[in-house]
Length: 133
Image (cartoon, rainbow, N blue to C red; front, side, top):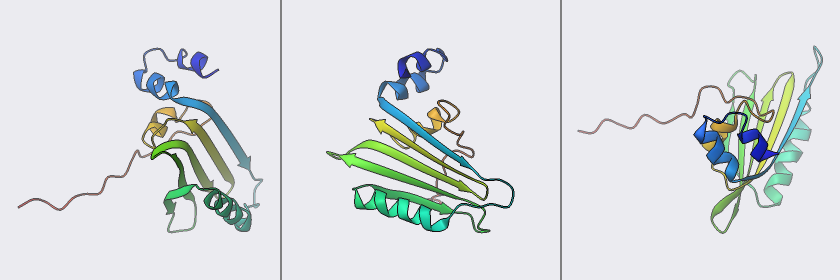
């Protein structure tokens, strides 16, 4: 199925390269009706379970106004990334994307918008290094 998907956009070499290293993709999307919200305790238990099974949380970006959160988790095997999970939380929705295979976090940008994976908006934040004298 991944090979077929890579042929849907034959001119996107980055997408094809990323798909070549992917074994599987799982997307879980949860939407809440107006006024309803996710249970923070359930999200905490999911994070604890990932941590207890050897995953490493490498990013946890919480919106200052409490309007959302993005968490990035990696699982390593022999010092190589074997799995990536992204948790995107907004007031009325929660998305959990899990990708297995040889993939880097930067490769997620190329998968965004495909396979039900939400587009990653804003790209990757790069710190502004101090100017050199």
